[in-house]
Length: 156
Image (cartoon, rainbow, N blue to C red; front, side):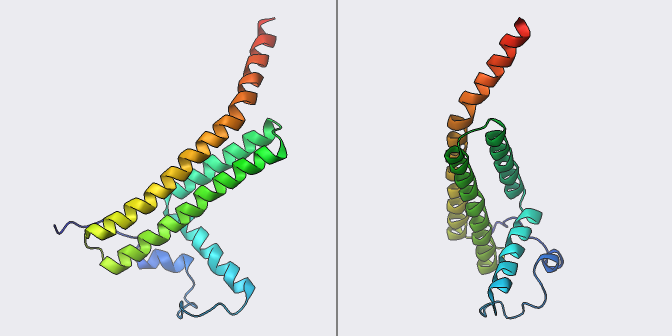
């Protein structure tokens, strides 16, 4: 089976995200600020290149925005934020796994590469489903109450 997998972003698009100054990527960051800079570069890369990361981020913002709008308790907003944050973190890890696998197999099909990528994507899916369930359990009751209340006011 010599099937090609989807290609990664081209090197010139990577240069806009990852600084050319980081030629020794294996070395330890010189200070905490530099560490945060590298972490932000990873988040920026995922945002710019990964459609699913942007989707998850949008849904996260919507869920937190609805939570605040509906005046949920602080702990409920925190639970929604934590579960949403875990989805985003797993999406970043999924992107990292896919990149390392692509680097390792050099854009050639390999069954173990497929398994690694599928499992990483599965982890994101599981966390996203749990986050949707949690958000639905916390947001839907007050949202339905608000809708029913506004409907009964309009009927009067």
